[in-house]
Each structure stands twice: as structure tokens, then as C-alpha cells.
Image (cartoon, rainbow, N blue to C red):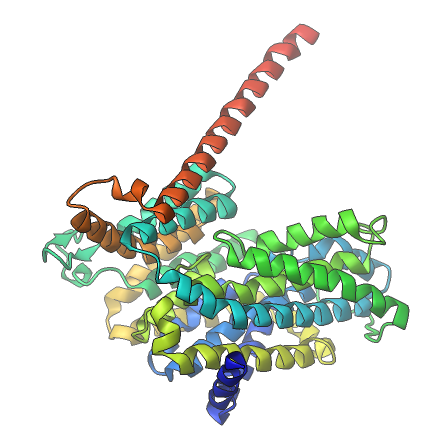
Length: 504
């Protein structure tokens, strides 16, 4: 009963004209960036982050959240119709594009839209009931426990995003070092400023986000020089009843998988889509068709994709730990508005938390309308030439960065990080862990100092406390397993090298 009262309270804030407008705007922009090749929620939220300074707190966060989960709807469209995926729609290319080749584009798009709606609905229910409970559990955490939890996030996200634990941790450490630039709060000492006055307050998160994701992504797309032809096929959206019945079981399975993986550190839509697809190949009644243009191959991954995007908000808002780069940017938006996500946020800002949850219900309905009956019109977006699109994006990057402090130095810093982000991409090093390290680095340092003060300089506090001890044990086991796997693969490679000359 208390949850229902809280939802009514949330809808009273979400249904204001201003917040409805921001919700609709976020869902529309999210769908658009999901459609456009080369853009995505990460780059778009970084582009729009400067706007949060001048927008009401609840409206700004509702809009940014709408962009994130709206993009999960839209990114399936380009994957299904043109085989141009984003990271979270790679699996949609497999069966979705096969259905397009069979002339069933409308069926694939309808399946993706309805499954995303089901996944989003299930995830919002999980968010509604689980986030407040997890927030109460978070009160049991001390400074040492938070340190260990952040380290778990570093390890999981580093491995999942880059595939290499060493590369990912290296990027995390770069982010931690960037986060330590500026004046130390405790001692007042300038750190890593190179005697440059404009670095005394540190590097702005907007400059890093716009540079490493916005400008770097544009530069990478210009470097690729790919010609993309618009989709000109026919679309018949209404499926038959037997086809519709095949959507529901896979969508429900994908919703459960996505909801679970969205909560875990290092999870999110990318991992959830593969897990849901693998599950359908094991248990689906039509598993023999998956991979050759199956409804289940589209439904499960679309539901998991959307569910994971929604439940990603649970660890952010209840514990204060972002589990991926997009959530790190959302955390930056909270901090910009003077709100620290964590267990105190739900009690201290109930109108914000429950308003955001209620807006997700509204946004889910908006997105169903945008992505099922109106999908024909969205496909015309592919006709926009990229040489028209990218100068406008760069222009808004510079304007957004400059408008925060009215300082031209911020623009130069953004350009420098754009070049650095492009270099990372060319070296095949994902900058996402860098963003996580930049956000969590100062928090890790602060909690580490508190732990040392409380334990009088003893490191035993990280082992003696049950929560931190368990988390440190998990980190140690994971790193040991990765190390063992690395040396085992090297051993096998050497055996093959020795065996090859002998065979000849």
C-alpha cells in the first residue's frame, strides 16, 4: 500500500505539463539518437549535460533518463532494417535483419517495439519495489564497504566494457588521476595543475564527456567514411495471432534476464541482450529457427535490452554507485543539481525519485506509440547526410561547454579530450571505464581516508568487516581467475606454435 501511495505522489509530479514535456522530449530525442548511426545515449547525454544547469532538477533528470531508455527502443530499428547496430543492438542484427531479408521488416519492428514495452514495464516494477529496499540495506555500509564496492565496480565494468581486465583497469586509473586534478579539499594543496590557474578547480566532467564520447565519436565516424543508403522496403506492422503469441514468452524471459543483469555491476543492455539470446536458444520452443530470422531472436534481446536500461538506475539511486558510463553521466547530472545519489536520496528527495519512476511509466507509453505506429516516419531520418549532421553537433558541443563557465579554456580542454578519446578508440581502448574512474575516484579517495581515520591507519578494516571482506574476496578470486585464464591461453598458444613445425 505504501508503494502505491508513493507512486501516486510520483505521478503528481511527473504529470505536470513541464515534466510531461521533458519526458516526451527525452523519449523522442532518445529514439532519434538510437536510430542515427554514430550517435547513442552516451554521446547525446554528454552533449545535453550543460542544459541541466538551466532546467528544473526533476525535469532535467526525467529528460536525460528518457534519452537513455528511449535509445534502447530506437537502436533496434537501424539494426533490423539496415544491419547498422549500436552496442546494445548487436544481437538484433542477427534475426532482425534476416526477417528484413525475408520481407518481414514490419513483423521484426513490431516485435522489437512490443517486447521493449514489456521489458520496460517489468523493469519499472522491479525498480519500484527493489530500489527503496536496497536503499535501506545501503545504510549498513561503512566507508570501508563503499571502498570495496567501488573497487568491484571498477573490476566488473573494466572487464565487461573492454574485454581485457588490464586495459580496463588502466583506463579506470587514468580516470581516477583526472579526478584528482585540482585543489585537495583536506590540505588545500594544488595537485597536477601544472601551475595553470584554470585547473585549480579540476577538470569539468562535461569537458571529458563531450570530448571522449561526443567529439571522439564524430571523428571516428568521419574517419570510417561509410556510405549508408536509406531503407526503402515495405512495412506491414500488424502480425497474425500465432505470431503475436510467440512474442510474449521470449519477451518475458528477456525481461527477467535484463532486470537481473541491469542491477549487477558491469551489467547493462550490452550483456543482457547476449544472455537473453543465449537463453532463448536453449529453452525456446522454436530454438531451431533462432539465427535464421526468428521472432524469438528479436523479442528476447529487445526486452532484455530495455529492462537492463531501466534497472541500471537501481544501484545508482539506492547505493550511489553507477554501474556503467551512462549511469556515471546520470550521476554527474545529479551532482550538478546538488544531489548526491545514494540511500539518503530517496528519503531526502522523494519527489525526485518517485517522479522519475512515474515518468518511466509515462515514457514507456510514449515510446510504444513512437516506435510501433510511427516507425515508418522515423525511417526517413536515415536520409539526413552525415556531412550536414556532424557540423551542427560540433557547434553545440562548443556552445554547451562554453556556456557552463563562460570560459574559452573549457572549449580547448574539450577539444583536447576529443583528440584523446579518438586515440583511445583507434587503440581499441574503450573510454567508458575512464568516465567511471573520474566519477568514482574522488569518492573512493574520500571513503578511503575515512576508513583509515576510523581504523587508526590499519588496513585490517577492509578484511574484518563482513561486507568489505566478502567484496575484497570476490575481487581477489576474479583477478586470480583472469590471471590463470591468461597464462593458460598463452600456454596453449605456445603448444600450438611448437606443434605446427613438427606437423610440417
